Image: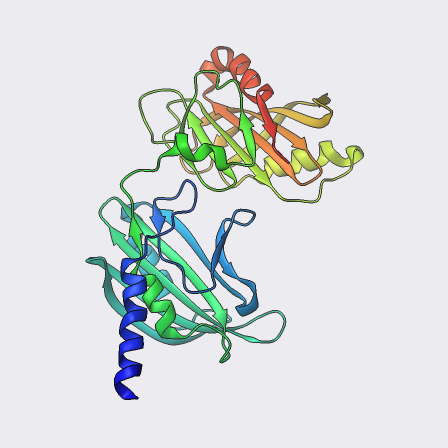
Length: 308
């Protein structure tokens, strides 16, 4: 009997070892999900609702690893209790794994695993949770999943753009640089660094969100732009609404500063309100290049259509 049990455990470990990792659209990070977990295109995470379980990824810069490590190893995290911390390796790369317990808003206990991995070209941050009962995932099952974590060198964005919940018609000269399940960022120019803002940047994002009524669409759009965490000191020059292919759109032209660098920017934000959610198209460039890019920004926005 003992031999049979050991054999079954060995075969189970082989399943994970030889299974191909799953990469969410646009993500460099992939893994072999635990049994029963599937990828949700609506939410962009791996999940198993029956176990209140989920896996979320975040790609960060390599130099952000040290700060992330200090943050997640806080011995007294607010609202959570540390169960275990360890420094380890994942795929040969330095990593830190923290296990915590947290009471959910519904009153039951959740187990959380926070993993930070320092790969040479990026920092990987993974957050896993599962209900803390015999019906939830075991620590061993989650560790097997986390040990399957890999980072692919590049993302085949052109091939994966078909998975987005919207279609891009006229690209107006912009090329895709980064995407995930619900959004994409594009630019024009040789650099893929979207944070320098030396090149025009357009982002398109779909949010499954209850659409506000047309009477409050303008106020909603203005509040959304002013609350953008990448911008500060936003001032609005123009706000107008119109119909586009039978759907309400709200367009805002404004000036702002980049929240991180303080660089001055001009912004064109277009919101489209659909039955299943809101499409946001945000285009930014430097003030001196406004005339050169704004017509193309509008052409790009006109060519985008929601699939839902």
